[in-house]
Length: 316
Image: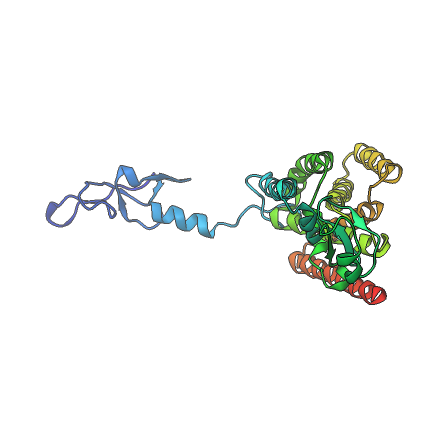
């Protein structure tokens, strides 16, 4: 235990360094300052003062996950924030008096389109802004919505946070709630967020390349399929039981290709992106792991941006 503090000069009573009016007889085990009972903090041996406890917490290396990320104290926070953003966007579209315009700004439109303001997601089959504003009926309902090929590049990300049908957002957010905390606990918060956003981007790029040019796509499904792919890779890496994961992925794959109005392009692109990202994070060598992971993620992002530029040139 900590050594007792000696009496002061000429028999004066020692006092706490933080509370000069209080008698104290214990020294901090680390800095040897005199501390009173209110300032005593338990340590491995004896007691420490509050200042040394704070300094120790600051300099102690934080716990890391197996793949280099900081281990989160609450692995569900990031998923809850993402769910909250999706719900807020869904509510905004639900209650907005100009929901069609909001949808047209957020959804992924490969090319500019003539959309309906009163019916969210509906479009008019005209291919010029002039005809859209003058030749459609009812008057005033149509508006010209910019597509990615005409500069609305933000849609590659905003579309992944946009939903219209309640079943669509319900299924995606439930899947995120199930998958997200597991992956955040395994990867750490920053790496998990990078996985989610880049999976969403790879899904959107696949939609931009392989969907009909007059289509509109929304939903977090690309990112969710990316999480499925990442979970498969990590389970394989730790030699876990991948059978249940494969069954779940198989069921979703069947639904993707058999149910109408589901973007197989976004699902497939997100899944492949998630597999690639998780492979990079999980199999990066321990030496210079963070540098290699960051370089890989930046490289994948650049590849996606080049793919967007090439597709934009083709559609020009």
